[in-house]
Image (cartoon, rainbow, N blue to C red; front, side, top):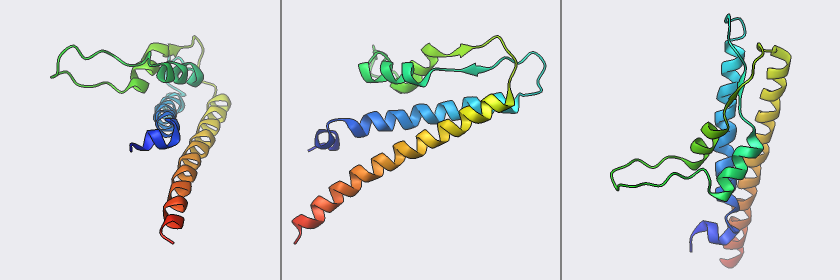
Length: 128
């Protein structure tokens, strides 16, 4: 039985959430790194909209040939929601977004760990 059937697909959704959070982390770090770059504009994407597209399957691209590489649905959804704001980088705001993103990444990874702990508990109790 596939692991997704066991948890109703929640592990796959959380896996995609971790990927999207990781991509957003890199984008925020890029904003901070370019704080003093003349003409640089803030770049970001709305996490919620990207996750909605991933969950609904809108982020998947059709493979028209078996030799084509598969594209991660989270990456495709993120690119479609990418935006560049017409303002310079505000360090305080970017640090706040960075902290929030890190916290949400940690929460999601702990939820996945708890799912597997529950599975291990069921397996261990069955061995008694």
